[in-house]
Length: 422
Image 1 (tube, rainbow, N blue to C red):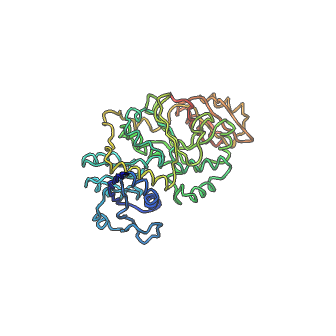
Image 2 (tube, rainbow, N blue to C red):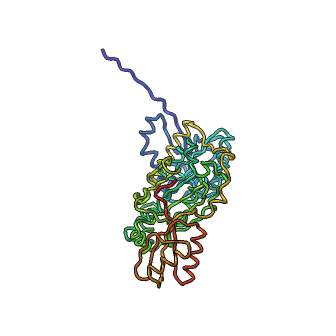
Image 3 (spheres, rainbow, N blue to C red):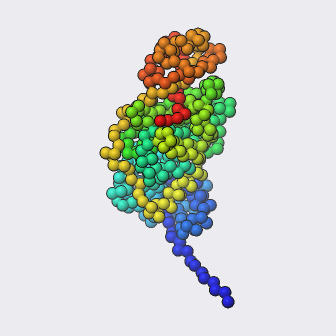
């Protein structure tokens, strides 16, 4: 005789309210279909109940989600969790605030919103006993936000360094292979890594917003995106890339911040020595180091594309409906005010690319030394030279660059990412 014991799995229905149904929103709907079996195994039946969009008539790759451009109509649906992928600050901020005030958890991938209003929205969520999840707002497919939110000592390590924008990283990786900036940008758009209007990626604003969110997690709630000095990648030329290689490194789009005694920050192109871990990653891969020296925590993984962002959002949805805790900031008194100290790059080595040079390499080295910016290594060809200098203050760099440019030489400079931070 055989005995068959049938066990039934209780499936919890989860209704998502979508704010936005563009590239990422459609990818979320498609990912739900593809992940249906995995979600069922977890006891969840997840569906999109309705989406609030700007233009319901716009063609979309999904057809089974009710669309409306009327917030009142959208709000009449019954949602268990709201996913915000509108982008921008308004109306996203107002809609997210209204949702949290109603006690409904929110998942967002909107780094502009979180950088500008994340502190107040997290406080609003706590006040209404709900939660705000934003893993996908920082490094898309790299699970760093939720990890750092649970590890306040690691998240407050005092130093952050990384390649945190997959689009700009892809473009510079392609330029390293010999492509022009314009060709690499077109390829990034074609592959879905960048929007046709990709100023946020190219200018460094996207990376600065992500850095702001990370510092807020560490309790530095006075920091704003505008505090970070930044430069876009669109000023890079192919000879800059080649001369960096001759100097034993590569140009990468890097976000750097240190809140220690020698505080400072930088968002933009930087010279990365070939021996540094950041030089080993390529394409849309993101990498982030939090902390200093042996205590640093390293995260790495894919950082661009609607598909990976959608999966990260759905992971947050699962956490939100499971009620695994709210995202809370450290108390403000834990963190000293640092914003004012981050408005210039910290002391360190510098890489200079010089065009229209008429002096010899030796004369150039002497000139730099006399201006308190001694050269450590130098590469040159014709009227173009590139130099890696010894450590110097940002003030010394600026003074030396002014002196060089007064001779008719065109100078582009970048910070050098240290091989060992300590």
